Image (cartoon, rainbow, N blue to C red; front, side, top):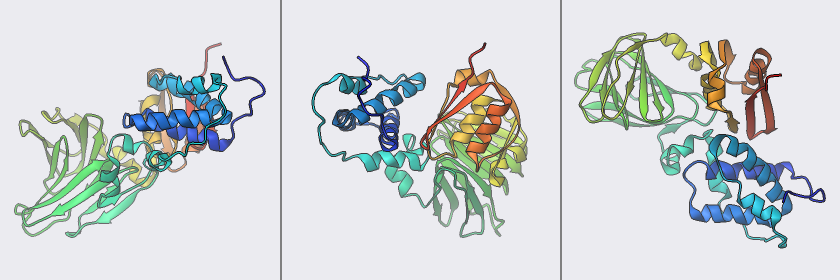
Length: 326
């Protein structure tokens, strides 16, 4: 049974809270206590239940999230409950990194030596005058000792500019992730964490990329890219290194790229959620230079160029869909 016409329309606060809850529930981090708290929130007020029901419908298009709690609350004739929502702050943290915390434990991110929020870039000068430029939603720890200059990339992406020192062999410079390391051979390069791998792109000089288990390593030259997994380093592929680093200047350069790839990059710079069907967007391709710091304008441009519809439900949720064929 759907909501009847007598039920009030949900206000923006209820819609935003529903998005926060569903972000947490679809992140893979939600506990049973949080799931119970969500069900309680849905039952507190008809507006909550209706907002959740509608947002569940949107989320289920992409995540397969079951739309049971809100529907049950809508069908219930019980009076609203008044349990406090104890976990709202935890859920809200998800939006700080544009989904970052679905991949990185919260304490690890917040306790990092340096970090950036969604849409933020930051330049950090290290003790040896090397510099790191952190991309949106990134976090690093720095560990310098008498033998190694080490950067642990916890999340996101960094552009590394390694300073020249008198005896680099005695204090090698390396960026580490759970997949392996990218050791500088006097260079400028990008290191990016992705799901299941670390991507290294060299802009100048060379990098020695090695897997975490030590079984595989390759030297990567300028305008080459490799993917490092725990057990292997891929064959280097030719890329345009400066194009890959265009985010440093706040630009996204696409050269006949799948729209899904462009949207994935834009989503990293948004505090809210950008939802879309990646399989549908793969069929659309785009070329151009787009602004990363004004995502709404870029989405409007993409909508003007391609057969897509961009719907802004709230500042926290934007959905991109392919227009149906007439």
